Image (cartoon, rainbow, N blue to C red):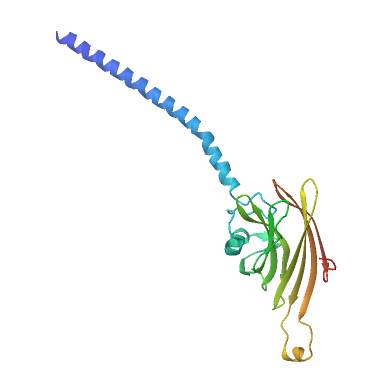
Length: 229
């Protein structure tokens, strides 16, 4: 009688063990199926996150999120994008200040463009540069360095901007920039009515604007004022 009871108990344990093994196998199988099912969603979220940055909008390739207000957040976004990077053969150490952006007139065929000038900190005297922004479906992004940094001559620089678009399969935008840098004068120079203009330069840059991003096509720079803005 004891042997029979022992055998019954052993059988019960065997069946319980087999049942637990089957349940465990089903659990892990379902878990694998579940993980496989959610992986595409994870990839989608990753792709959406990448699309929400400015990295593909232009040559500057800023790995920062778009912004809704260019006036409020443009300088901060630009600072996050360029600080510590080598651009145009110079390492940008920081930004001292930014001018108010110059926004292209409304009615353009592809989005909106804007230019923001900035006083840059590089390895040497403060420099003046200008950067191009584009408005995407998610907000504003800094897309390229429009004007290379130049020494401020101990004074200041000002830039006038002109936008022009031409029709084509993709929209071609020409941006004409005239930069005038002024240098401080001493009292004798002021009395002699000498000019405080240190340098004048004119730059024409052409971009192709499309849904895939903004591509720089050409750049022409001359010393002197722009003849036709």
